[in-house]
Amino acid sequence: MLYSEKVMDHFEHPRNVGELADADGVGQVGNPKCGDIMKMYLKIDGDVITDVKFKTFGCGSAIATSSMATELIKGRTIGEAMGLTNAAVAEALDGLPGYKMHCSVLAEEAIKAALADYYKRQGKPVPDSLKLPCEDEEHGGCCACGH
Ligand code: FES
Image 1 (cartoon, rainbow, N blue to C red):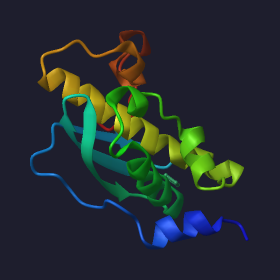
Image 2: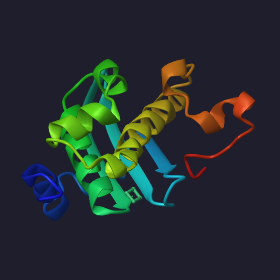
Image 3: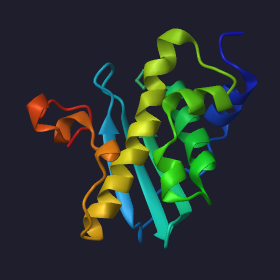
């Protein structure tokens, strides 16, 4: 079997799909390898992510990793969400085939983009660890995020 049972479960029954009209942070990223897009909505109270929803226009692995990522950060602190890596999301799904690992990057980046948006809305400086390549001037605005 190419995909783990967990990947198939999250692909067929993705958790936390949708939008949050009153989100405190919204992030959208695009995958430069395939053009797929993910949008992440966060509701944040104090330091805690109280709700999260996502929409993914993408492949099954992107949907499964987004779904798992939302479960992993819901109820967690901003710091914990910031430290979530795509490798950890893939591991929580009992792994992805190597050539699909790039799909899991979308979830990590969408969370970071949504947290960065939250900091901006709060009028606070965005921590370096949340900056995506396109916001890095050295990078000349190359775009992994669909902005
Ligand atoms: Fe595009 Fe998986 S093929 S995210």
